Length: 437
Image (cartoon, rainbow, N blue to C red; front, top):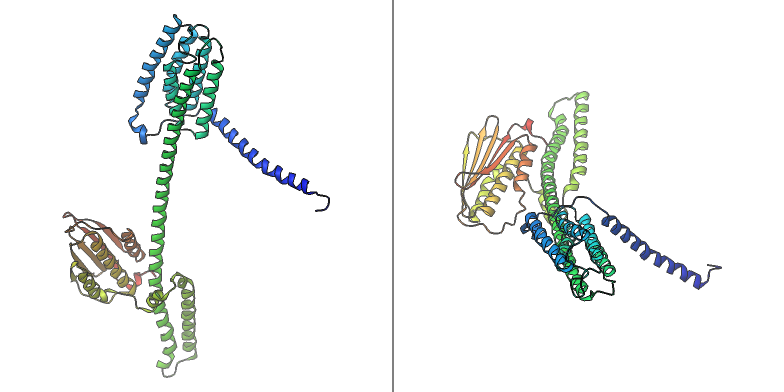
């Protein structure tokens, strides 16, 4: 651009590049500050390594080590001053507080360590515990561990820095030897933070994995349900389209069956045919999108939909696959509506598939009962003769059968039998007027 030198442009880009990291650092520091001053209740999670860490054990540890901490200072100071005694009690109490409110517990324990070291300054002989006692280090290590198990890693690191900073300030007295004790404390504190942060990261990852698995299972069930509904819709599309085509043809042929049809009759029949053709066109346009592409889908598109007339072929195929199947028919067989016949066939087909997958070697009985009010379908298998292998099914066949029965206004019941087998029973309306396309 005119008036803009290369140096100016480079400075602008550089400034923008620096601004982004600075903004990110400010965001992180703001989040750490908010977390470090958060006093909300945060109980220990009841899982993982914390399952064997009852609260009573932590309280007993705090009591025993707290008494040992007071004893260490009593032996070193002889006698213990009031501020030091109060701080040792507060530090032991911070461990119990860390079970429910880890952030305030960390501040309390750090403050107790700092005040204890400052109050004991000049009263502890050279070579004794300084700036912290071994028991005090153990108590604060447990507090940092309990903190790191529940807060983000950045907060745990900030707590570690604050603790070591307070120790370095307390150890600034030239009259004491503190480097060795402070370095050992730093190792203990850092180890607690690393272990706690690692356990928390693993727990969070497992929780997210479980949530993802639940979402995946729900999505798979939803997708399977939609696929089954789409399959039902495609089959009903063929049934309804067939009837609409028949209506159109009959309306076209009807005038030729009458010697001298009136103009009014011709007009009405023409209107019937026109409406049937329009309905058939709209039906194919709306439901045709449910069909899959490919040669197999095209072949299935022109194949007639199965009914109970093909039950014998279905049973023969299942027997050829090694399943012992017997069939029985009660009542007087009569023509069924296409929707009811298709639904009954699919229910028997799915029940036999489930028996082959989940009950190998079982004996299966298929009962078709013709009743005045409808059709009863019952498929019962005995207990499996051998352990089933890995099932290749989706696990939602029963859901599809319920969808089909409910679509026709029927009922379906499934459940185990007393002998260890399984039973599927469906009651379907046989009156064509009750079929719902």
